[in-house]
Length: 425
Image (cartoon, rainbow, N blue to C red; front, top):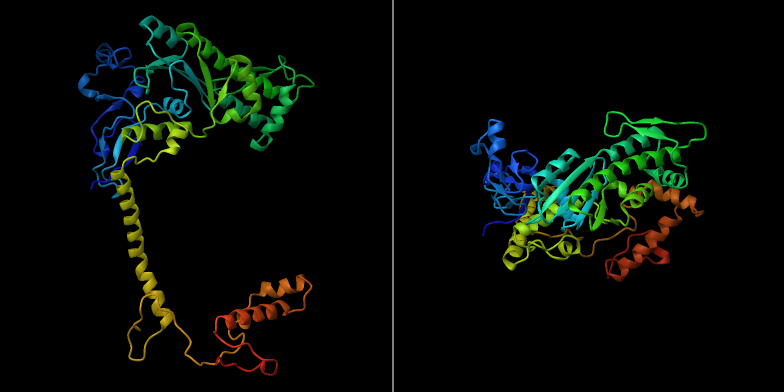
């Protein structure tokens, strides 16, 4: 039975994995060679740049099987289904459940991105108008939709401000609290999107909270400008979902809420990875084309049908057998050392799992071989507890005798023969 699994590729080329040569539509829109409305290569742009269609690979949608691994990369990957997850920010929108038409994802990371999904492609004049505002129009990973994408470096500016203020992750909550009631308007922020962050208006009485508030407000204003530029062309967003590390900052979320209105914060820590996993599950048929991320994915197995579940069981069993095979020589050497050589030379025959036992009737001396190897820390523990040295040892020895007697291993010593070997009857 062929092995099946899922592998997602960040790039649009899978020829090295023995799949067919192809490119994701959502990534092809970033090349400048794609006719976005037609979802096909743009002949005029190709001719202008000296390229031809022969150079370009076939275009495929995200989450569609594009082949299977046949190269000898790993025995466990042979036969795995290959699919493309498309643009990373679009995959994050899917993972955060913000990929429906009218929804907007605010990916608030080091590089902040606004990702809005729309049902109808803008005309060429509006696409050009959006482009002049720093917003691209691309095919969406959601079938039949398009995506508007604009980005800022507000997150990078906020990181630089924290470095300047000497505030680490543990001090961010206190800085957010100081910024909540700090005055605004005195600190002037510049250099967002540039090589260096500049601060002006640092007069007497300006504290870290006021500086932090000014930087956060400037970054939020940049994101708001992109948000409004999208509104001017395609209408207002129905909802805005915030993901990324900066959503954990109270001041960042206050600044966004003051500008965008009501926000939703995604609870998914790695929205991009979850979105890629959803597309992978769709590629093997474990999820339907419109089934969302979130609890639906975690509640359903990746291998949905009985045959694929059997494949997973066989792969697990194969790994266990291989591990046991590799460990067997080591176990054999340990057994030989423990049993020692037999009288006639050679290895001593022994049944697998057999234990060496004391001959019946052999005398047993209490504590033999134990007191000499008693850990030093137990002696120290006896003294620390206020007990006489050796008191804990005697207590443990008595407890061992009690359990051994109950198991029939040897008889407890009598008061008159406590120091002599005792024979079980």
